[in-house]
Image (cartoon, rainbow, N blue to C red; front, side, top):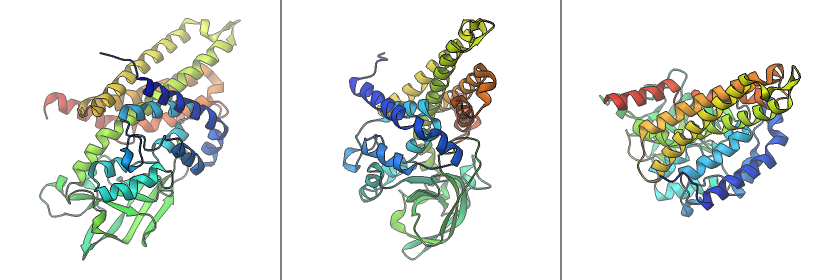
Length: 381
């Protein structure tokens, strides 16, 4: 088994690190404190080829795979999770287009994303339906050659900045199977009846835009349907089995960044006449962080490698997302602990990392959902 990256992959990693280290530090605090979405940063990242790197070249991408996107994700989140979230989620929902869209849909919706001309979102969660996707009630009713959509969504990434969304809607309410009642329809944000209200005061990733969406008789053509009607639940399950790999890379990135900041602080901070790094208690913390990070990275890379080979492993993806997310949270917590009182203060990056880390254990499938997937696969249920 070869654990070495190719020269192309090393170059991608290096380029992502240089971009993040050059662009993020100057605006990270401001975007966090002001809940400011850095649209110009998305455009700049797109110009350098970081947005949509895994999409086919004919649709504006670079034709790379999940592993290459993981490398970019890890480096971005290592420098600043909030800004990393903005850039990685600029195409959130585009995998749905890539997987199930027609050639016409791919050209129409993927190319503007890779050019930085548009941002995309996925509208899934509702006030009464989070992990239970089959319980979604936003309705898309057929009316001639259109769908008319009514309902609302919450906690939607890119809610007020996206040009279009992949929206899961109830289209076949009378189907006896609750998993065959939904469809995924693309909805442009400029359609009459669509409204987005930004949510404020999030714990973390405050640079990332999050909103509630409202659909009031929003009319879209049937040609905006992805794939076949009634397959929406299974389409999004497949979608998540892919995007969760990159969420795992987020966990690895934030853990790596937190550990590096903890090491730098421990080498310089003195207590009782010695640097913190000379104390065995601190050494053990660093050793445990490094070991978990390496294990999480291996899980994420293997999941990405398998996906790139066309052997998507749902169990492995769930393991990678859960373990890497937990690793990110633990590493950020330990980094704050090592910083002591200073780690609790906003001018130190580890305070922000600590707040940003928790979301990885929640979105795109909570850690409890990941454990259900793992156990059901093992137990044959």
